[in-house]
Image (cartoon, rainbow, N blue to C red; front, side):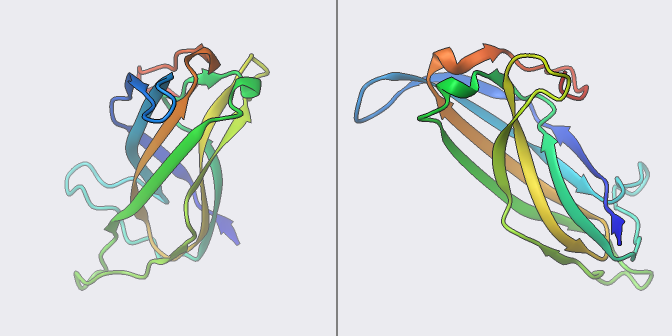
Length: 161
């Protein structure tokens, strides 16, 4: 089976210091958001993803492009929330909705830097099978101790370092 490509368009990351209600401890809250294109990106003229009706598997663990790099040992009390929603399904030649397939519940995990640098980054994990190009809107919230942050993530739009 063919593997589907997944690409990100990140929205601006939001970092805030919050006070936890029960303990009154200061925590770092980071909100990541954007679009994950599964299959092909949309055409510039129409904004619609092309109807590539090919059965493809999706098994992606991808670093968010603007991920911070965290001390994995300091994430013992991290709280994570992830939401995702289907944003776009390619249309058929008759202008009807195409076949979608299925994506399982998205998840988030921390993985070590791919080039061996210190820290672990946030990865969005998507799995399933698709029959057309899709766009998924995602939002990930990470709540952790401030000292868990080793390095601030890149916001230039380039892939994570």
